[in-house]
Length: 268
Image 1: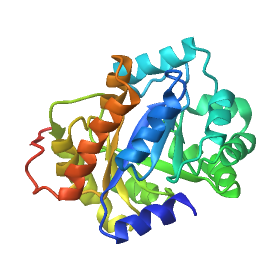
Image 2 (image 1 turned 45 degrees about the vertical axis):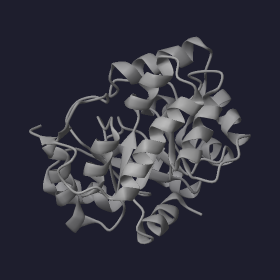
Image 3 (image 1 turned 135 degrees about the vertical axis):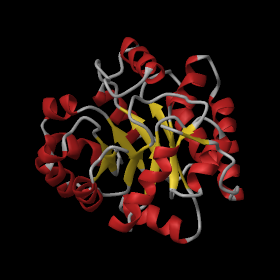
C-alpha cells in the first residue's frame, strides 16, 4: 500500500498521525529504536540518511548525523539494514539532494523501494527543480513529500500542496530543527492556509518536543513529526525502551484529543 493511502485510511478512522524520526546508524541498536517507535504507536517512521552537511538541521540532528557517520554509516548500509527489518508501518527516508544526485534519481529511488521505503523527503530540493526526482520517485512507487514553510506565498503553497505526495510537511517555524519550549503560532496559521489547497494529510514538524505540544498541534493538523527530542535522548544514552516510552506518552496524548490551548502557541 502506498504511503498516502495508508495515512488517509488512518486519518479517516479518526486517528491523529505520529511520525517519529531516527538517524540511520546512530547506534548499533538503531533498528531496535525503530521497532520501539512502531510498538509505541507510530503511524509512519522517518529514517534520516546521514549527510556530511545537514544544513536544515539544528544542533541535535547534526550531532546525531555526525555520530552515525563516525560509526561508518552509509546510505547503502542503512538501506540494507532496513531491507531486513520487518515493520508494519510505512518508512520515509529523508536526506539531502547531494546524495540523490550522487546515485542518480532513478537508481536512488529504486534502492529505496528495494529496501521497503515508501516515502522520501529532500528538504533542500527547490520546487522548481523537483520534476526529475518526482518522476523517478513515482516510477519506483515512492511518495515524494514536499515541505511548506510559514513564509511560503499563496501561489507557491498551492503548488506544493498539489505536487506533494504522501502528505504535506508543514514546517512550524523558519529555522532549523530542534527542541523548543513552545510551538510557534505560525504553525497553526500555516495549517489553516493549507487546508483549502489540499485534502492530503498535513503533518507539522520542527520543534515538537512534548506530549502536550504534540496534542495541541494535532488539534489543528492531521499529525506531528518528532525528531530532535527523540535523538537527544538517544545521544544521551537512552535505551530503545526508554525512547519508546517517551514516544508512547505522545501517542496517548494524541489519542486523548486534548483541547486546543494546552500546547502554548507563541508568536513566531
